[in-house]
Length: 287
Image (tube, rainbow, N blue to C red):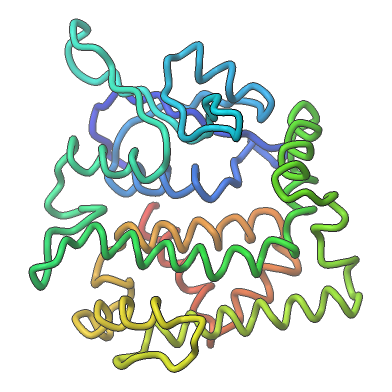
């Protein structure tokens, strides 16, 4: 794979999986985009409990604020040192902001993450709306089924900070956040609900008219409008993957990594195998 000679430092979250491979959907999507655009980058792994310290040490911007008003730091983040040493490196946090920056800075008319304006409407805003609906719909249905799996693959150093952060965020214990043990009625019910949600999202990607399902009154028209223009193509927006595809595959990739023998086997077979094909197409594209 021939890459553009860029000097990008990418801050990622390692796991205990082979090679320390990361599973965060937010970091996965940025790496997918950089690989797709063939940009050179190096990875600096950061343990979960060290995120704030490392971000402060590297002058990386916060991505939000805590209830008390103090800054809140998350990954992914990048430092782009490409170009003259006399020029101050660009320091960017938040996956969407990073991907927007990469698309503007490293123009590639053949591989845009955010294609140009279509139908007189800002395409980036529609793209982000569509992809956010994927996250709003799919991730909550998966969360109780994978939270404990995600915890299990954290490094020993990251496990307790990760648990504390998520139990504080959701105000429930990790066990309470889960859907129950394997084979339990509660877990099978959660899988059935997740499958229904995935089926609904799949249908909303195919519709040409307003989706009657009230949960997708916003998603249906947005996706339907785009699909009308690109019906029959392998990716949501056409012949090539763009932002919404990277978002979707990042969530699917997370499941494939943390629960390959159960969760991924199920999901990859849903909707006539659509979700498995999405990931396989992306993997093939990036070889």
